[in-house]
Image 1 (tube, rainbow, N blue to C red):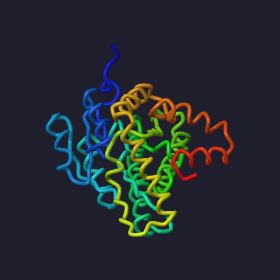
Image 2: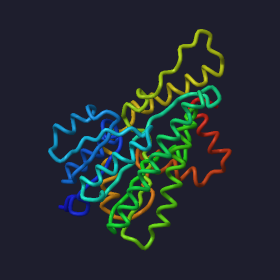
Image 3: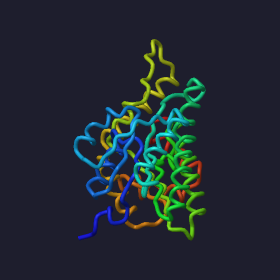
Length: 282
């Protein structure tokens, strides 16, 4: 029987721990004996984890407020003994709609919170890990890096940016005891779609509106029929145990294995055509 992750990592910081993948990651780490500081915009949303484990610390953190997020992380790191052994940047949300018809301030807010503030937390974490000469940074990106989602330009930009940041840090940490993981989940059965701003009611929908609505229905159906988040937690557990930097794809066999292989072997025009038909926008 393999030893628990707590033999390798004593403390962890997980953003977006109140539901979905973040909650599954936190539960997995707690079961492995790791002390977890988990975040949500409101600490009250973390009561399930708080009540189930004496070593879970609920932290209120809003990625939309970068200075506050920096201060919150600094306080949590001090509580943890000067830094965390694992930092999992998981928090995020989606905005579904035409890029040109979405208020730019809403689009910019998603980039600022999910990319800029997450990069800030990565910067803080990496400095502490380098000083302590140990640690693993996990940036939860998405298979949308390879298969962009229609009508979700902000989400696609964020995840591609975080993936590029992770790739950069993988190079920069070569020859050090630190590890960086670009964790790319596919569709999982979470409330991700329910947390998006609702689509506006349309009195006289146009053909373009119908296209968007059809794409939404396909996205929603895919999420509802996807694996449970516990599978992603198991994949992350294996990756943490390996103590190696790299890209980890997680999801169904088609999404995480076959799809990326087809993508790498196909010309861009064919890949776009397949995605358009898959999402009903052909």
